[in-house]
Picture 1: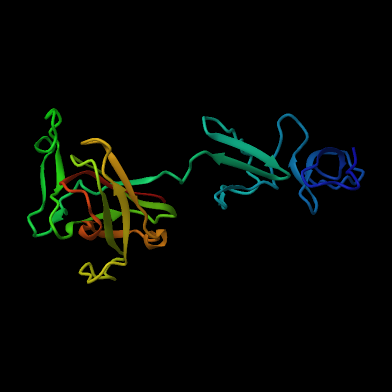
Picture 2 (picture 1 turned 60 degrees about the vertical axis):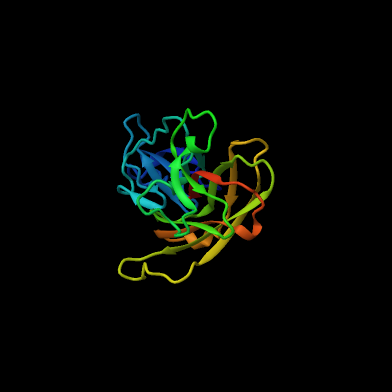
Length: 266
């Protein structure tokens, strides 16, 4: 057949009167070509036979980067859970569910960097010392309800930039069942290699989170402290100070800190 007069991008025909195989010129010859309109002209994508031929108008890409040589004969087979392929005109798009969006998680209480303030009111002890049943005896950090702020210092490595969702989350409890309290978290992210000092004199930000006493002794409580996400836009060392703020505290008992974690989406 001859070439259509008003084609659309992606239209494909078998030309049986080409001047030569792959010419896509419909010039009253006798050669056969499989041709596709790319929006500006006709290009050969085969010879019109079952064996096929070179795909001169195809270029495979990965995230916009060319993969292999243009025109190479390649089969794209979308296989496996979470992988879908869609075709629009001359563009094939492959989507992998969840790619590049896994949440980053850091347990801030698991490491040798932890250091309580010098008040003697922040310390590590078995949870059984404060609990009633004495069955689980893991260590917890105790903030012992003094008349001043109580602090715990630490650091962790942020391996990649956070694009969204940065948050600190504390899991705590108390034997007290009334009152309110406030936690604060001061932090700074030190970036670079032989560029910035680890000996900083201030935090880039101090953020707070408020909570109420548990409804019954030793119930699990969770409070979220939300920092400015752009402060985590570069990988680096996160230095932090977690504080039980005395001026906003009416929980008249010690609290036990069971978990402190940082999460974000890279």
